[in-house]
Length: 190
Length: 383
Image (tube, rainbow over all chains, first blue to last red; front, side, top):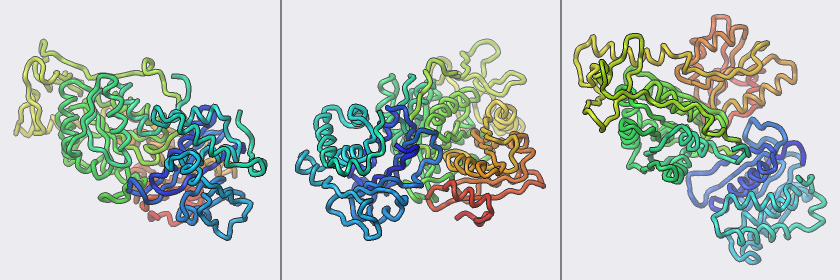
Protein backbone atom coordinates (compact mmCIF):
# COMPACT_ATOMS: atom_id res chain seq x y z
CA UNK A 1 0.00 0.00 0.00
CA UNK A 2 1.24 3.50 -0.70
CA UNK A 3 2.09 5.61 2.30
CA UNK A 4 -1.31 7.26 2.40
CA UNK A 5 -4.52 5.96 0.85
CA UNK A 6 -7.54 8.24 0.73
CA UNK A 7 -10.89 6.53 0.21
CA UNK A 8 -14.38 7.90 -0.34
CA UNK A 9 -17.64 5.95 -0.07
CA UNK A 10 -20.71 7.58 -1.56
CA UNK A 11 -24.32 6.72 -2.16
CA UNK A 12 -27.75 7.31 -0.78
CA UNK A 13 -28.52 7.51 2.96
CA UNK A 14 -29.33 4.02 4.25
CA UNK A 15 -27.03 2.17 1.82
CA UNK A 16 -24.42 1.78 4.52
CA UNK A 17 -21.54 3.68 2.94
CA UNK A 18 -20.58 5.11 6.33
CA UNK A 19 -20.27 1.62 7.77
CA UNK A 20 -18.14 0.56 4.80
CA UNK A 21 -15.69 3.36 5.58
CA UNK A 22 -15.70 2.49 9.28
CA UNK A 23 -14.80 -1.13 8.49
CA UNK A 24 -11.70 -0.12 6.53
CA UNK A 25 -10.64 2.27 9.28
CA UNK A 26 -11.16 -0.48 11.85
CA UNK A 27 -9.13 -2.96 9.79
CA UNK A 28 -6.29 -0.43 9.57
CA UNK A 29 -6.34 0.06 13.34
CA UNK A 30 -6.32 -3.72 13.86
CA UNK A 31 -3.17 -3.76 11.70
CA UNK A 32 -1.52 -0.99 13.70
CA UNK A 33 -1.83 1.61 10.94
CA UNK A 34 -3.12 5.14 11.34
CA UNK A 35 -6.69 5.72 10.21
CA UNK A 36 -9.15 8.58 10.31
CA UNK A 37 -12.77 8.15 9.31
CA UNK A 38 -15.38 10.86 8.86
CA UNK A 39 -18.68 11.41 7.11
CA UNK A 40 -20.95 14.02 5.66
CA UNK A 41 -24.67 13.57 5.20
CA UNK A 42 -27.86 15.53 4.96
CA UNK A 43 -30.51 15.80 7.67
CA UNK A 44 -32.49 12.80 6.34
CA UNK A 45 -32.27 9.40 8.00
CA UNK A 46 -32.96 7.64 4.69
CA UNK A 47 -32.39 8.94 1.18
CA UNK A 48 -30.44 12.09 0.52
CA UNK A 49 -26.78 11.91 -0.32
CA UNK A 50 -24.27 10.28 1.96
CA UNK A 51 -20.50 10.51 1.81
CA UNK A 52 -18.00 8.85 4.08
CA UNK A 53 -14.24 9.03 4.04
CA UNK A 54 -11.42 6.91 5.35
CA UNK A 55 -7.76 7.85 5.23
CA UNK A 56 -5.24 5.12 5.97
CA UNK A 57 -1.60 6.01 6.50
CA UNK A 58 1.66 4.82 7.97
CA UNK A 59 2.15 8.32 9.41
CA UNK A 60 0.13 10.53 11.72
CA UNK A 61 -2.95 11.89 9.99
CA UNK A 62 -3.82 15.49 10.84
CA UNK A 63 -6.28 16.91 8.34
CA UNK A 64 -9.15 14.46 8.43
CA UNK A 65 -10.77 15.02 5.04
CA UNK A 66 -9.86 13.53 1.67
CA UNK A 67 -7.72 15.79 -0.53
CA UNK A 68 -6.12 13.31 -2.94
CA UNK A 69 -8.97 10.92 -3.60
CA UNK A 70 -7.25 7.61 -4.47
CA UNK A 71 -10.43 5.55 -4.43
CA UNK A 72 -14.12 6.33 -4.83
CA UNK A 73 -17.03 3.96 -4.31
CA UNK A 74 -20.23 5.21 -5.94
CA UNK A 75 -23.52 3.38 -5.45
CA UNK A 76 -25.77 6.02 -7.03
CA UNK A 77 -25.50 8.04 -10.24
CA UNK A 78 -25.86 11.29 -8.29
CA UNK A 79 -22.94 10.40 -6.06
CA UNK A 80 -20.83 9.33 -9.02
CA UNK A 81 -21.53 12.52 -10.96
CA UNK A 82 -20.82 14.65 -7.92
CA UNK A 83 -17.59 13.06 -6.70
CA UNK A 84 -15.91 11.60 -9.80
CA UNK A 85 -14.54 15.03 -10.82
CA UNK A 86 -12.75 15.19 -7.44
CA UNK A 87 -10.80 11.97 -7.99
CA UNK A 88 -7.02 12.24 -7.93
CA UNK A 89 -5.34 12.00 -11.34
CA UNK A 90 -4.66 8.28 -10.92
CA UNK A 91 -7.66 7.66 -8.67
CA UNK A 92 -9.88 4.64 -9.24
CA UNK A 93 -13.66 4.52 -8.97
CA UNK A 94 -15.76 1.45 -8.28
CA UNK A 95 -19.33 1.79 -9.47
CA UNK A 96 -22.35 -0.41 -9.40
CA UNK A 97 -23.02 -1.91 -12.83
CA UNK A 98 -26.30 0.01 -13.04
CA UNK A 99 -24.45 3.33 -13.27
CA UNK A 100 -22.85 4.93 -16.28
CA UNK A 101 -19.37 6.31 -15.85
CA UNK A 102 -18.77 9.90 -16.92
CA UNK A 103 -17.00 10.22 -20.28
CA UNK A 104 -14.04 12.13 -18.87
CA UNK A 105 -12.95 9.11 -16.83
CA UNK A 106 -10.46 6.82 -18.56
CA UNK A 107 -12.06 3.34 -18.65
CA UNK A 108 -8.93 1.93 -16.97
CA UNK A 109 -9.89 3.91 -13.89
CA UNK A 110 -13.46 2.63 -13.71
CA UNK A 111 -14.26 -0.71 -12.15
CA UNK A 112 -17.89 -1.62 -12.77
CA UNK A 113 -19.17 -4.40 -10.52
CA UNK A 114 -22.67 -5.85 -9.94
CA UNK A 115 -22.67 -4.88 -6.24
CA UNK A 116 -26.40 -4.37 -5.75
CA UNK A 117 -27.37 -7.43 -7.85
CA UNK A 118 -24.87 -9.60 -5.99
CA UNK A 119 -26.31 -8.50 -2.63
CA UNK A 120 -29.86 -9.11 -3.81
CA UNK A 121 -29.38 -12.38 -5.67
CA UNK A 122 -26.20 -14.11 -4.46
CA UNK A 123 -26.33 -13.11 -0.81
CA UNK A 124 -30.11 -12.77 -0.79
CA UNK A 125 -30.33 -9.47 1.10
CA UNK A 126 -30.12 -6.06 -0.56
CA UNK A 127 -28.94 -4.41 2.67
CA UNK A 128 -25.66 -6.32 2.50
CA UNK A 129 -24.58 -4.28 -0.56
CA UNK A 130 -22.16 -2.25 1.53
CA UNK A 131 -20.43 -5.38 2.84
CA UNK A 132 -20.34 -6.85 -0.68
CA UNK A 133 -18.61 -3.62 -1.73
CA UNK A 134 -16.14 -3.91 1.17
CA UNK A 135 -15.22 -7.44 0.05
CA UNK A 136 -14.79 -6.29 -3.55
CA UNK A 137 -12.74 -3.19 -2.70
CA UNK A 138 -10.46 -5.13 -0.40
CA UNK A 139 -9.85 -7.76 -3.07
CA UNK A 140 -9.31 -5.17 -5.79
CA UNK A 141 -6.50 -3.42 -3.92
CA UNK A 142 -5.35 -6.32 -1.77
CA UNK A 143 -5.61 -4.14 1.32
CA UNK A 144 -6.16 -6.51 4.26
CA UNK A 145 -6.00 -10.22 4.91
CA UNK A 146 -9.32 -11.97 5.33
CA UNK A 147 -9.01 -12.51 9.07
CA UNK A 148 -8.40 -8.80 9.70
CA UNK A 149 -11.31 -7.80 7.53
CA UNK A 150 -13.66 -10.27 9.22
CA UNK A 151 -12.54 -8.99 12.61
CA UNK A 152 -13.23 -5.41 11.50
CA UNK A 153 -16.68 -6.37 10.18
CA UNK A 154 -17.52 -8.31 13.35
CA UNK A 155 -16.93 -5.24 15.50
CA UNK A 156 -19.59 -3.26 13.67
CA UNK A 157 -22.49 -5.59 12.95
CA UNK A 158 -25.30 -6.85 15.18
CA UNK A 159 -24.51 -10.13 16.95
CA UNK A 160 -25.97 -13.07 15.07
CA UNK A 161 -25.49 -11.57 11.61
CA UNK A 162 -21.89 -12.78 11.21
CA UNK A 163 -22.75 -15.57 8.78
CA UNK A 164 -24.76 -13.30 6.53
CA UNK A 165 -22.09 -10.60 6.52
CA UNK A 166 -19.21 -13.01 5.97
CA UNK A 167 -21.12 -14.47 3.02
CA UNK A 168 -21.50 -10.94 1.68
CA UNK A 169 -17.75 -10.35 2.11
CA UNK A 170 -16.92 -13.53 0.19
CA UNK A 171 -19.45 -12.76 -2.53
CA UNK A 172 -17.90 -9.31 -2.94
CA UNK A 173 -14.44 -10.78 -3.12
CA UNK A 174 -15.58 -13.21 -5.84
CA UNK A 175 -16.72 -10.27 -8.00
CA UNK A 176 -13.11 -9.32 -8.61
CA UNK A 177 -11.42 -11.51 -11.17
CA UNK A 178 -7.70 -12.13 -11.24
CA UNK A 179 -7.20 -9.75 -14.16
CA UNK A 180 -8.72 -6.83 -12.24
CA UNK A 181 -6.88 -7.76 -9.09
CA UNK A 182 -3.52 -7.83 -10.81
CA UNK A 183 -4.13 -4.43 -12.35
CA UNK A 184 -4.97 -2.62 -9.14
CA UNK A 185 -3.24 -4.61 -6.41
CA UNK A 186 -1.43 -2.12 -4.21
CA UNK A 187 0.43 -4.35 -1.79
CA UNK A 188 -1.10 -6.73 0.66
CA UNK A 189 -0.92 -5.67 4.31
CA UNK A 190 0.21 -8.63 6.32
CA UNK B 1 -6.19 -0.91 27.72
CA UNK B 2 -3.09 -1.00 25.62
CA UNK B 3 -4.50 -1.99 22.28
CA UNK B 4 -5.64 0.73 19.90
CA UNK B 5 -9.35 0.81 19.13
CA UNK B 6 -11.28 2.74 16.52
CA UNK B 7 -13.36 5.29 18.35
CA UNK B 8 -15.45 8.31 17.51
CA UNK B 9 -14.91 11.64 19.28
CA UNK B 10 -18.44 11.53 20.69
CA UNK B 11 -17.90 8.01 22.04
CA UNK B 12 -14.62 9.10 23.64
CA UNK B 13 -16.52 11.78 25.55
CA UNK B 14 -18.76 9.14 27.12
CA UNK B 15 -15.80 6.93 28.06
CA UNK B 16 -14.01 9.96 29.51
CA UNK B 17 -17.07 10.94 31.50
CA UNK B 18 -17.43 7.46 32.96
CA UNK B 19 -13.71 7.36 33.80
CA UNK B 20 -14.10 10.72 35.55
CA UNK B 21 -16.87 9.25 37.69
CA UNK B 22 -19.94 10.62 35.92
CA UNK B 23 -23.02 8.52 36.58
CA UNK B 24 -25.87 10.73 35.36
CA UNK B 25 -26.75 12.01 31.91
CA UNK B 26 -29.90 13.92 31.01
CA UNK B 27 -30.22 15.24 27.51
CA UNK B 28 -32.12 15.74 24.32
CA UNK B 29 -30.31 14.19 21.34
CA UNK B 30 -29.27 16.53 18.54
CA UNK B 31 -26.91 16.14 15.59
CA UNK B 32 -23.91 16.15 15.70
CA UNK B 33 -23.87 15.25 19.40
CA UNK B 34 -26.41 12.41 19.21
CA UNK B 35 -23.88 9.60 19.69
CA UNK B 36 -23.07 10.99 23.14
CA UNK B 37 -26.68 10.48 24.25
CA UNK B 38 -26.87 7.13 22.45
CA UNK B 39 -23.67 5.84 23.98
CA UNK B 40 -24.58 7.18 27.44
CA UNK B 41 -27.89 5.32 27.26
CA UNK B 42 -25.93 2.14 26.64
CA UNK B 43 -22.95 2.64 28.91
CA UNK B 44 -24.24 4.41 32.02
CA UNK B 45 -26.59 1.63 33.15
CA UNK B 46 -23.65 -0.79 32.79
CA UNK B 47 -21.75 1.11 35.48
CA UNK B 48 -24.71 1.73 37.78
CA UNK B 49 -25.48 5.13 36.31
CA UNK B 50 -28.64 6.78 35.02
CA UNK B 51 -29.61 8.02 31.58
CA UNK B 52 -32.70 10.14 31.06
CA UNK B 53 -33.95 11.47 27.77
CA UNK B 54 -35.55 14.78 28.64
CA UNK B 55 -38.32 16.74 26.94
CA UNK B 56 -35.95 19.54 25.96
CA UNK B 57 -32.61 21.17 26.72
CA UNK B 58 -33.92 23.49 29.44
CA UNK B 59 -35.01 20.47 31.42
CA UNK B 60 -31.81 18.62 30.57
CA UNK B 61 -29.60 21.09 32.41
CA UNK B 62 -32.15 21.36 35.23
CA UNK B 63 -31.99 17.59 35.75
CA UNK B 64 -28.21 17.60 35.52
CA UNK B 65 -27.97 20.34 38.17
CA UNK B 66 -30.38 18.50 40.43
CA UNK B 67 -28.47 15.23 40.15
CA UNK B 68 -25.17 16.96 40.76
CA UNK B 69 -26.46 18.85 43.79
CA UNK B 70 -27.55 15.48 45.18
CA UNK B 71 -23.97 14.29 44.82
CA UNK B 72 -23.68 12.53 41.43
CA UNK B 73 -21.26 13.77 38.79
CA UNK B 74 -23.52 14.72 35.89
CA UNK B 75 -23.38 15.85 32.29
CA UNK B 76 -25.34 16.58 29.17
CA UNK B 77 -24.53 17.02 25.49
CA UNK B 78 -26.02 19.16 22.76
CA UNK B 79 -25.33 21.31 19.73
CA UNK B 80 -25.94 24.98 18.89
CA UNK B 81 -29.77 25.12 19.01
CA UNK B 82 -29.85 23.12 22.24
CA UNK B 83 -26.92 25.06 23.68
CA UNK B 84 -28.96 28.24 23.26
CA UNK B 85 -31.81 26.71 25.27
CA UNK B 86 -29.43 25.57 28.01
CA UNK B 87 -28.03 29.01 28.72
CA UNK B 88 -30.46 30.05 31.45
CA UNK B 89 -29.73 27.03 33.59
CA UNK B 90 -25.98 27.17 32.90
CA UNK B 91 -26.11 30.59 34.55
CA UNK B 92 -28.09 29.07 37.41
CA UNK B 93 -25.40 26.44 37.83
CA UNK B 94 -22.70 29.09 37.87
CA UNK B 95 -24.60 31.18 40.44
CA UNK B 96 -25.56 28.28 42.69
CA UNK B 97 -22.08 26.72 42.21
CA UNK B 98 -23.21 23.31 41.06
CA UNK B 99 -20.54 21.29 39.20
CA UNK B 100 -21.51 19.75 35.87
CA UNK B 101 -20.21 19.30 32.35
CA UNK B 102 -22.03 20.61 29.27
CA UNK B 103 -20.79 19.21 25.97
CA UNK B 104 -21.51 21.38 22.92
CA UNK B 105 -20.65 19.67 19.64
CA UNK B 106 -20.82 22.74 17.46
CA UNK B 107 -22.59 22.73 14.13
CA UNK B 108 -23.14 25.48 11.59
CA UNK B 109 -25.68 28.09 12.70
CA UNK B 110 -27.30 30.44 13.36
CA UNK B 111 -30.58 28.80 14.40
CA UNK B 112 -30.96 25.25 13.10
CA UNK B 113 -28.47 26.24 10.38
CA UNK B 114 -26.66 23.40 8.64
CA UNK B 115 -27.53 20.58 10.99
CA UNK B 116 -24.79 18.15 10.04
CA UNK B 117 -21.99 20.56 9.13
CA UNK B 118 -18.99 21.66 11.20
CA UNK B 119 -18.60 25.07 12.77
CA UNK B 120 -16.96 26.82 15.69
CA UNK B 121 -19.55 29.53 15.86
CA UNK B 122 -20.44 28.96 19.53
CA UNK B 123 -17.08 30.24 20.76
CA UNK B 124 -18.49 33.49 22.11
CA UNK B 125 -21.74 31.84 23.18
CA UNK B 126 -19.70 29.55 25.42
CA UNK B 127 -18.37 32.69 27.11
CA UNK B 128 -21.35 35.02 27.08
CA UNK B 129 -24.35 32.81 26.32
CA UNK B 130 -25.93 33.18 29.73
CA UNK B 131 -26.68 36.63 31.03
CA UNK B 132 -24.81 38.61 33.63
CA UNK B 133 -21.16 38.53 34.63
CA UNK B 134 -20.43 34.92 35.33
CA UNK B 135 -17.48 32.56 35.55
CA UNK B 136 -16.79 30.25 32.61
CA UNK B 137 -14.42 27.41 31.90
CA UNK B 138 -14.45 25.93 28.39
CA UNK B 139 -12.10 23.34 26.89
CA UNK B 140 -11.81 22.36 23.23
CA UNK B 141 -10.34 19.07 21.96
CA UNK B 142 -8.69 18.50 18.58
CA UNK B 143 -8.55 14.71 18.49
CA UNK B 144 -10.48 11.68 19.71
CA UNK B 145 -7.95 10.96 22.46
CA UNK B 146 -8.02 14.57 23.55
CA UNK B 147 -11.83 14.45 23.62
CA UNK B 148 -11.43 11.69 26.21
CA UNK B 149 -8.75 13.48 28.22
CA UNK B 150 -10.47 16.85 28.20
CA UNK B 151 -13.76 15.31 29.28
CA UNK B 152 -11.96 13.95 32.34
CA UNK B 153 -10.39 17.35 32.88
CA UNK B 154 -13.72 19.11 32.41
CA UNK B 155 -15.18 17.07 35.27
CA UNK B 156 -12.08 17.65 37.39
CA UNK B 157 -12.21 21.43 36.96
CA UNK B 158 -15.96 21.44 37.45
CA UNK B 159 -15.64 19.57 40.74
CA UNK B 160 -12.66 21.58 41.94
CA UNK B 161 -14.20 24.98 41.22
CA UNK B 162 -17.85 24.08 41.67
CA UNK B 163 -18.93 25.50 38.35
CA UNK B 164 -20.39 24.26 35.05
CA UNK B 165 -17.61 23.47 32.57
CA UNK B 166 -18.23 23.51 28.83
CA UNK B 167 -16.56 21.00 26.57
CA UNK B 168 -16.59 22.98 23.34
CA UNK B 169 -16.26 20.31 20.65
CA UNK B 170 -16.88 20.70 16.96
CA UNK B 171 -18.38 18.34 14.40
CA UNK B 172 -14.90 17.69 13.01
CA UNK B 173 -13.80 15.97 16.22
CA UNK B 174 -17.20 14.75 17.43
CA UNK B 175 -17.91 12.76 14.27
CA UNK B 176 -14.37 11.69 13.48
CA UNK B 177 -13.15 8.19 14.19
CA UNK B 178 -9.51 7.39 14.74
CA UNK B 179 -7.45 4.71 16.41
CA UNK B 180 -6.87 5.53 20.06
CA UNK B 181 -5.23 3.83 23.00
CA UNK B 182 -7.17 4.98 26.02
CA UNK B 183 -5.28 5.36 29.30
CA UNK B 184 -6.00 2.95 32.10
CA UNK B 185 -8.76 4.75 34.08
CA UNK B 186 -7.01 3.75 37.30
CA UNK B 187 -4.02 5.86 36.32
CA UNK B 188 -6.03 9.04 35.81
CA UNK B 189 -6.13 11.85 38.33
CA UNK B 190 -9.77 12.26 39.33
CA UNK B 191 -10.92 15.24 41.39
CA UNK B 192 -14.14 15.18 43.34
CA UNK B 193 -15.81 18.09 45.06
CA UNK B 194 -14.81 18.97 48.57
CA UNK B 195 -17.68 18.03 50.85
CA UNK B 196 -18.72 19.43 54.20
CA UNK B 197 -21.10 17.91 56.68
CA UNK B 198 -22.22 20.85 58.77
CA UNK B 199 -19.40 20.60 61.25
CA UNK B 200 -17.61 23.26 63.28
CA UNK B 201 -17.53 26.83 61.99
CA UNK B 202 -18.55 25.64 58.59
CA UNK B 203 -22.27 25.68 59.25
CA UNK B 204 -23.30 27.87 56.34
CA UNK B 205 -23.60 26.17 52.98
CA UNK B 206 -21.72 28.90 51.07
CA UNK B 207 -19.16 29.61 53.75
CA UNK B 208 -15.67 30.11 52.33
CA UNK B 209 -12.63 30.35 54.59
CA UNK B 210 -10.47 33.48 54.31
CA UNK B 211 -8.13 33.31 51.31
CA UNK B 212 -10.13 30.61 49.55
CA UNK B 213 -12.64 30.85 46.73
CA UNK B 214 -14.61 27.61 46.63
CA UNK B 215 -17.05 26.60 49.35
CA UNK B 216 -17.15 22.93 50.33
CA UNK B 217 -20.38 21.37 49.13
CA UNK B 218 -23.05 20.04 51.41
CA UNK B 219 -24.88 17.02 50.04
CA UNK B 220 -28.35 18.21 49.05
CA UNK B 221 -31.21 16.05 50.21
CA UNK B 222 -29.22 14.34 52.93
CA UNK B 223 -28.82 15.72 56.44
CA UNK B 224 -29.49 19.37 57.10
CA UNK B 225 -31.78 21.27 54.71
CA UNK B 226 -30.40 24.27 52.89
CA UNK B 227 -31.41 26.63 50.13
CA UNK B 228 -30.19 26.69 46.53
CA UNK B 229 -31.12 29.70 44.42
CA UNK B 230 -30.18 31.62 41.33
CA UNK B 231 -30.84 34.83 43.24
CA UNK B 232 -27.91 36.67 44.76
CA UNK B 233 -27.46 35.04 48.14
CA UNK B 234 -25.44 35.23 51.31
CA UNK B 235 -23.46 32.36 52.82
CA UNK B 236 -26.65 30.80 54.18
CA UNK B 237 -27.82 30.26 50.59
CA UNK B 238 -30.89 32.49 51.09
CA UNK B 239 -31.51 35.49 48.81
CA UNK B 240 -30.20 38.87 49.78
CA UNK B 241 -30.77 42.38 48.49
CA UNK B 242 -27.79 43.68 50.40
CA UNK B 243 -25.72 45.12 47.55
CA UNK B 244 -22.43 44.76 49.37
CA UNK B 245 -23.07 41.09 50.15
CA UNK B 246 -24.43 40.34 46.66
CA UNK B 247 -21.54 42.14 44.96
CA UNK B 248 -18.96 40.34 47.07
CA UNK B 249 -20.61 37.01 46.31
CA UNK B 250 -20.56 37.52 42.55
CA UNK B 251 -17.01 38.91 42.74
CA UNK B 252 -15.96 35.70 44.47
CA UNK B 253 -17.51 33.64 41.63
CA UNK B 254 -15.46 35.57 39.09
CA UNK B 255 -12.32 35.55 41.25
CA UNK B 256 -12.40 31.80 41.73
CA UNK B 257 -11.72 31.39 38.01
CA UNK B 258 -9.56 34.50 37.42
CA UNK B 259 -7.28 33.92 40.41
CA UNK B 260 -6.83 30.30 39.44
CA UNK B 261 -6.38 30.92 35.73
CA UNK B 262 -2.91 29.36 35.67
CA UNK B 263 -4.33 26.13 37.07
CA UNK B 264 -7.21 26.13 34.60
CA UNK B 265 -5.49 27.25 31.40
CA UNK B 266 -3.71 24.78 29.15
CA UNK B 267 -2.27 25.63 25.75
CA UNK B 268 -0.40 23.77 23.04
CA UNK B 269 2.58 25.19 21.20
CA UNK B 270 4.27 23.62 18.18
CA UNK B 271 7.49 24.88 16.57
CA UNK B 272 7.12 28.34 18.10
CA UNK B 273 10.73 28.74 19.28
CA UNK B 274 12.01 30.19 16.01
CA UNK B 275 8.64 31.06 14.50
CA UNK B 276 7.99 34.38 12.83
CA UNK B 277 4.37 33.47 12.19
CA UNK B 278 2.01 31.67 14.54
CA UNK B 279 -1.20 30.04 13.43
CA UNK B 280 -3.70 30.46 16.25
CA UNK B 281 -6.64 28.07 16.26
CA UNK B 282 -8.64 25.79 18.53
CA UNK B 283 -10.42 22.43 18.36
CA UNK B 284 -10.58 20.46 15.11
CA UNK B 285 -9.11 23.35 13.10
CA UNK B 286 -5.71 22.33 14.46
CA UNK B 287 -5.70 19.36 12.09
CA UNK B 288 -5.59 21.52 8.95
CA UNK B 289 -3.14 23.89 10.65
CA UNK B 290 -0.66 21.08 11.35
CA UNK B 291 -0.55 20.03 7.69
CA UNK B 292 -0.22 23.67 6.62
CA UNK B 293 2.67 24.20 9.04
CA UNK B 294 4.39 21.07 7.74
CA UNK B 295 4.03 22.27 4.14
CA UNK B 296 5.31 25.76 4.98
CA UNK B 297 8.20 24.47 7.07
CA UNK B 298 9.24 22.23 4.18
CA UNK B 299 9.70 25.43 2.19
CA UNK B 300 11.74 27.02 4.97
CA UNK B 301 9.01 29.28 6.31
CA UNK B 302 9.23 29.78 10.08
CA UNK B 303 5.68 28.98 11.09
CA UNK B 304 4.39 27.51 14.35
CA UNK B 305 1.17 26.80 16.19
CA UNK B 306 -0.45 28.32 19.26
CA UNK B 307 -3.59 26.54 20.36
CA UNK B 308 -5.75 27.40 23.36
CA UNK B 309 -6.79 24.03 24.80
CA UNK B 310 -8.61 25.94 27.52
CA UNK B 311 -10.51 28.35 25.28
CA UNK B 312 -12.15 30.18 28.22
CA UNK B 313 -10.69 31.87 30.14
CA UNK B 314 -8.78 32.98 27.05
CA UNK B 315 -5.02 32.34 27.54
CA UNK B 316 -4.05 35.95 26.95
CA UNK B 317 -0.93 35.89 29.11
CA UNK B 318 0.23 32.59 27.57
CA UNK B 319 -0.28 33.91 24.04
CA UNK B 320 1.78 37.01 24.86
CA UNK B 321 4.58 34.93 26.37
CA UNK B 322 4.76 32.13 23.83
CA UNK B 323 4.28 34.36 20.81
CA UNK B 324 6.42 37.26 22.09
CA UNK B 325 8.90 37.00 19.20
CA UNK B 326 6.28 36.27 16.56
CA UNK B 327 5.70 39.04 14.01
CA UNK B 328 2.46 37.74 12.60
CA UNK B 329 -0.51 35.89 14.02
CA UNK B 330 -2.92 34.14 11.68
CA UNK B 331 -6.18 33.27 13.40
CA UNK B 332 -7.97 30.36 11.75
CA UNK B 333 -11.42 29.35 12.95
CA UNK B 334 -14.70 28.02 11.58
CA UNK B 335 -16.67 31.19 12.29
CA UNK B 336 -16.73 34.84 11.22
CA UNK B 337 -13.98 35.94 13.59
CA UNK B 338 -14.75 35.25 17.24
CA UNK B 339 -11.49 34.15 18.89
CA UNK B 340 -9.95 36.69 16.51
CA UNK B 341 -11.23 39.42 18.82
CA UNK B 342 -9.41 37.90 21.79
CA UNK B 343 -6.19 37.54 19.81
CA UNK B 344 -6.41 41.14 18.61
CA UNK B 345 -6.73 42.26 22.23
CA UNK B 346 -3.72 40.21 23.27
CA UNK B 347 -1.45 41.07 20.33
CA UNK B 348 1.10 43.85 20.63
CA UNK B 349 0.95 46.96 18.44
CA UNK B 350 3.74 45.64 16.23
CA UNK B 351 2.21 42.22 15.61
CA UNK B 352 0.12 41.81 12.50
CA UNK B 353 -3.08 39.81 12.98
CA UNK B 354 -4.62 38.09 9.95
CA UNK B 355 -7.70 35.95 9.76
CA UNK B 356 -9.09 32.98 7.88
CA UNK B 357 -12.66 32.01 8.71
CA UNK B 358 -15.41 29.85 7.37
CA UNK B 359 -19.19 30.03 7.85
CA UNK B 360 -20.55 27.86 5.02
CA UNK B 361 -20.38 24.52 6.82
CA UNK B 362 -17.31 23.26 4.94
CA UNK B 363 -13.94 22.55 6.47
CA UNK B 364 -10.93 24.87 6.10
CA UNK B 365 -8.19 22.98 4.24
CA UNK B 366 -4.41 23.09 4.77
CA UNK B 367 -4.03 24.65 1.28
CA UNK B 368 -6.32 27.52 2.28
CA UNK B 369 -4.21 28.23 5.35
CA UNK B 370 -1.07 28.21 3.19
CA UNK B 371 -2.80 30.60 0.76
CA UNK B 372 -3.69 32.90 3.65
CA UNK B 373 -0.07 32.82 4.78
CA UNK B 374 0.93 33.85 1.27
CA UNK B 375 -1.61 36.65 1.35
CA UNK B 376 -3.59 35.18 -1.51
CA UNK B 377 -6.91 35.19 0.26
CA UNK B 378 -9.05 37.95 1.57
CA UNK B 379 -8.00 37.93 5.17
CA UNK B 380 -10.52 40.31 6.62
CA UNK B 381 -13.68 38.43 5.86
CA UNK B 382 -14.86 34.87 6.22
CA UNK B 383 -15.25 33.05 2.96
